[in-house]
Length: 171
Picture 1 (spheres, rainbow, N blue to C red):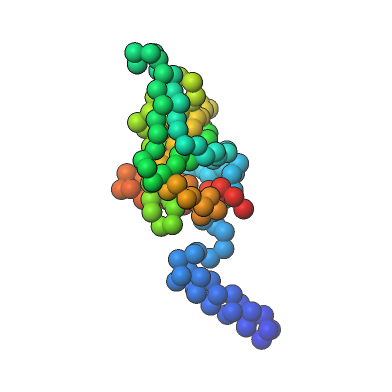
Picture 2 (cartoon, rainbow, N blue to C red):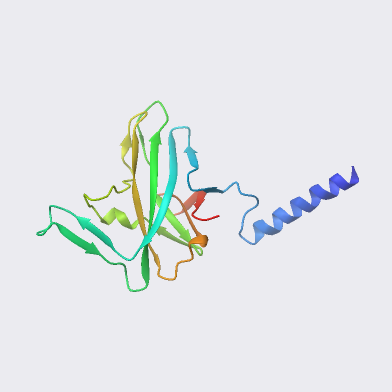
């Protein structure tokens, strides 16, 4: 019994130490690509896959020649994350905004400013009816020397905070 009690004290102490260093205790706040987060029993949100690119090549019939290429700031690259949001509740509900967390810096979805016909853009704050699915790429502008293992993506609340659960892009 004493050994079990000591083990519990050790585990609690270790969790406290880890929590104080900002890393969290256990994996309750992180999930892997392909796993879903259920929000208030109304929305299921899944980060499906990711890719990295140095431009966004668009087709938009509103532009004179129909084509446009966006390039990131001189210090940045684009991280694309494919999200699926589904209304699993019984009433209409808005799908959430998403954001990234990289080395402690929160970043809102860059692709809110990009509308293209040649790929689906994840459009947050869209009212989904029960059973309806909205999916597409959320694009973030992150540092060019990006370490993907240190990126987390999550729900971006109106106050600007990226909220758990966080998806990790690599194990």
